[in-house]
Amino acid sequence: MRSIKRIKISSRYKKSFRVLDPKIQEKAIEKINIFRKNPFDSRLKTHKLHGKDRDCWAFWIDYKYRIKFTFLSENEVLFLDIGPHNIYK
Image (cartoon, rainbow, N blue to C red; front, side):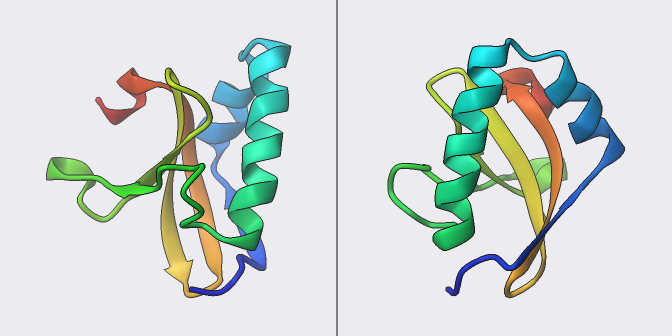
C-alpha cells in the first residue's frame, strides 16, 4: 500500500482528541506521522475490526489507546475515533 495522502477527521474524532491527555495527543501525532508514510508499519499494529465495525480498521497509539479509521480510497482515510479500547463499543 502507498502512503496516505489525505486524512479526513470526523467530528467524533475531534471531540475525543481534545479531551485526551496532552502526552497521549503527542504520541498520537507521532503515530499519525508514521501512519501517513505506511499505514501498515509494524509499529502501529494496524488491524481490521470485526462485527459491527467490519468495515473499519484501527492502529495502536500505545497499549491502551487506538485510532479507529476507514479507508475512503487507496490513499485517503477517515479517522472515526480515538481513545481507549471502548471506542469499539
